[in-house]
Length: 311
Ligand code: RIB
Image (cartoon, rainbow, N blue to C red):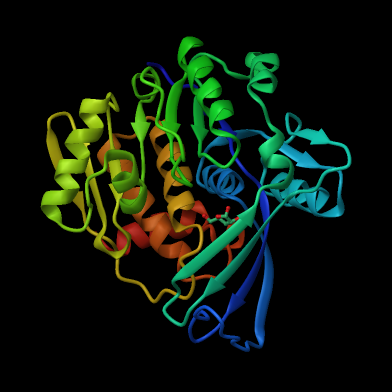
C-alpha cells in the first residue's frame, strides 16, 4: 500500500494528576509526597503527540467535554502541530482524568475516568467516515468504548487505510472474529498480550507462544513490548528481538504510547518495520528520562542523535 504519511489518531485524551514518591501506598496506607504535577495525557493524546513530533502529519478524532480541562488539552495538542478540528465536543461533560502514582524507579500505576472520551459511539465514527482516507494510517488505542474502536477499525480497513492498533487498556470483551484481519500492526504490551491470548508472557517461550497465538487469531504483524526487556515481533514467519536501551528512567508513564506513535510515524514515512521498531524503542526509552506523558515525548533530532550514539 502506498502511504500518504497522514495519520488519523483516535483514542482517549486525559489530564493526568501525577504524584511522585519513594513507593506507592499499599491498601489502607497514606504516603506523603511533596512532588505533584499535572500533565496532558491519555493514550490517544500521547500517541498523537509522539507521531506529530516524530515526523507524522496527524489529525485527531475523539471526544472531549466543554470544560476548561478539555480546552487546555486541545490547546496543548494544537501546539504540537496536531489538527484537532475533528475532535467532537460534548456539552455539559468533562475531559478524562487520570490519577497516576510513580515510584522511585519510575514505575507507574494508573486509574482513569474517561469522562467524555467514553461517549464516542460507533454512530459518531460512521458519521465521520470521510476522515478515514485510503493511504492514510489509522492509529488507535482502546480508551473509548470497544465497539466504537472496532467500528473505526472496520471502516478504516474498508476505506483502504493501514491500521495500527495498540490494545491499551486491554479490552474487557473478546475481539470480534473479523477485527484481527482488519489490523496491519498490533502492539500489545506483555500484560495485554497475556490477557488477549490467555498465554503467560513471562519468558521467551511464553512470548513466542503468544506471538504465534496472536498470528493464529488473525493479527498479521504482532509486536509485543516487554518493558526493559525490549520488544519481540513476529515478522513474516520469524520472531525478531529488539533489546531495550538502558537509560536512567524517572517516569515510565506513556512509554508504550510513545512507542506506538513513533513506530507509526516512522513506518508511515516508508521505513521498514525493523527500522521503525528500533526507532520506537529509542523514542520510548528517551521518554522515560523525562516526567509526564505528552511532555516526555522527544523531538526527532533527539531520537536521531540517540540512535547514532547507540549504533
Ligand atoms: O499510558 C499512559 C496514559 O494512560 C496516561 O497519560 C493516562 O492518561 C492514561 O490514559
